[in-house]
Structure formats: structure tokens, C-alpha cells
Length: 402
Ligand code: PMP
Image 1 (tube, protein in one colour):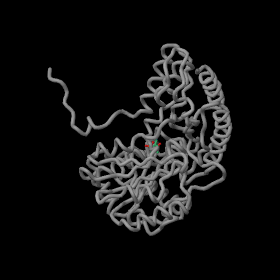
Image 2 (cartoon, rainbow, N blue to C red; image 1 turned 180 degrees about the horizontal axis):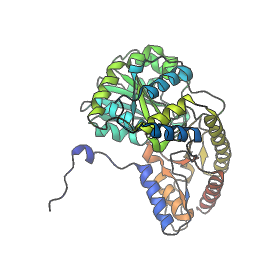
Image 3 (cartoon, rainbow, N blue to C red; image 1 turned 120 degrees about the horizontal axis):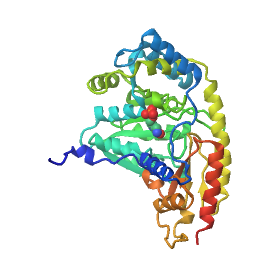
Image 4 (spheres, rainbow, N blue to C red; image 1 turned 90 degrees about the vertical axis):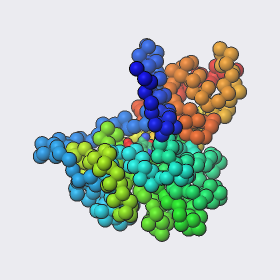
């Protein structure tokens, strides 16, 4: 039998590092090890009851067939209303399209727009999937390291230096996975001033964590701060994180009609329309009572405060307070060069993460996966008990280093 042969686009990409880290933690658990899993990137809450109920009703009403590729009128109305209500942005029903999660929205936008060699500016640390999605669509990811000293945010000077005639997209994720950093209106205006000089650069905003904010701040959208960018900005969002609906797979894109039509064409020949029941559930989530969002954010906030304090009390570790999302991006520069009890020297954040897993069973993801080292990412989308135990174990592991 001949060996399977795959396309070069598949050879260019790697499996998601956060999925691999979760798989390794689960494997160790199966072997009987006590594992504190701080890898997961999804809310630990159940989807609120009124949303599940709306899905059941939709199913029983016969929402069991294909829908329009762009999405049911009901869910598109809910998206348009949400953009108006929460972001003060006006979009028409023909300026939004529903996708199978935000992930598929981003991938499809790249697939619809990138030619070989087109560049996508990705501020680092970044969500692990961005560079691989660009590579899978024949593009060239241009990652720009945004150090902690700049709040992990892209500066106007960095943006100006990264733009070339081949730049197609600037990708903005605010609040960010993995750092939780969120841009302010002033910071957006400064970036927009650079973009004004480069009309060929388009912007994709990944707003998936917009509601998970601490310190009573509201997430400002780029287009609120710089409405002049509307014609070249594509908004990506979804219900996964806000409403604990990761498994329902509903995301969307909002933007100029020509892009929506392009996605309609591409998706109609690939994924087809999204799950009808999930679309009804997503509409109920956006149109319904928002109490769950307030309550879950209050819980994330408590966990952030308590876990942040515990991490910052461990000598050699430090963490900047995230503005939002549900991760801590922990600086482990203070552990690099230290020696583990078995004699191994920790040379990289990958070594630190392996050491935490081997010595104390704490599973995290190394900063190399996000393009800025030496750091590791912890998820706070898990119970406070688990987080407290994780911090105790990390303190013990660090104390054992020479
Ligand atoms: N963007 C970011 C920054 C994410 O962290 C994730 C989920 N890990 C997604 C998009 C994907 O969201 P969805 O479940 O809607 O595909």
C-alpha cells in the first residue's frame, strides 16, 4: 500500500499546541497521576437554561433543516441588534454571516482573501491558531513581538514598521488570548492614524472575549474609536465564550457586503449552512436576559484576583493583571537557568512547563506556542479549588529548584 500523500498546505501547519497539552494532561491522568489541568480554553459553566430551552423548542418546531447559508433571519437580526446595542455599530442584515464558530469565520476570511505571499500582521503573543490558519491559506504570517513592558499591545511604531506592500490584514484580538490585554480607544486611534497612511491594509477584529472584562471596563471596539476604518474592517465574534456555548459552534462575521457575499459563496461550497438548532440558541442568547454574563464575569474576576495574587507571591514568577478573557500569562524569566532536583536545567518556558507537569502534575501551555517567551499560560476557566491547588503545587515546584 502506498503511503498517504497530503497537500503542502497541510504539511505547513501543526496541531493546536493547547489541544496537545490538554491531551498530554489527560493521558497522564489516565495513567493514575493527579493532574491539575490549567490548559482548558472554554468556560467551565453550563450553557444557561433559557438558551437550552430555546434550542429544544426550536428543534420541536422543526428547525431541523438547512437554513440560509448566511444564517436564519432570526439570528442575523439578533447579531445586528447586538452590534447596535453593545457596540454602537450599525450593520444591515446583508452585512453579517453566521459561521461554525469564530474559528471557521477567521479561516474562511483568510481563505477568501489571501493569495500566496500575502502578509498578515499578527501581534504576539497571539492565539495559537492564527499563524497556522494564515499558512494553511498560503499566506505569510508576520508576527510582531509585543513585550510586557508595552502591555503586550502593538504600538503604532511597530505597526508602521511591519507594513509592506504585501500586507493584506492586521489582526486584532482584544481582550487577547493569552494575555487578556485590551486596547483603549486612544490606542486604537493611534493605530488608526498609521493605517490611514496605508489604505491597502485591512483589519480583522477577533472580539470573542469582549464581554469577559474586569475592573468595570467595557471593551471598546476599534470601529467605535476609528469609524473611518469601517469599509476595511471585518468583525469576527461568536457566542462560545460569552454564553458558555463552545459546543454549539456559532460565530459570525460582520462587514462590508462584498465580503459577506464572498463568504456566502465559499461556505456554500464547503461547510454549508450552520446548525439550525444552534442558530436558534444563539439568537436566544443574544436577545435574552444577560444576567449569566454578569454573573459569570463576576466569578472570573474573583478567580483572576485570587490566582493573580497567589502567582505573584511565588518568587521567580510574575503576572501582569489581564484586562479581560480568562487566562493568566505568567512571566517565568525568573526560573530560567534554575536547576530541577533531577539535575535538569530549565532553559526555556517549554522546560518550565514540562517540569511543572512532571514534578507536581500542573498542566499549562508554554509561551512558545503564543509567540512570546519565557511565559506560560494558565486558564482560570476552572474552579477556585483547582486554581488554589494549582498555585500550591507551583509554589512547591518552584521552591524545589536550585
Ligand atoms: N478566537 C480566540 C482568540 C479564541 O481563543 C478562540 C477559542 N479558543 C476562538 C477565536 C474560537 O472560538 P469559536 O469557539 O467560536 O470557534
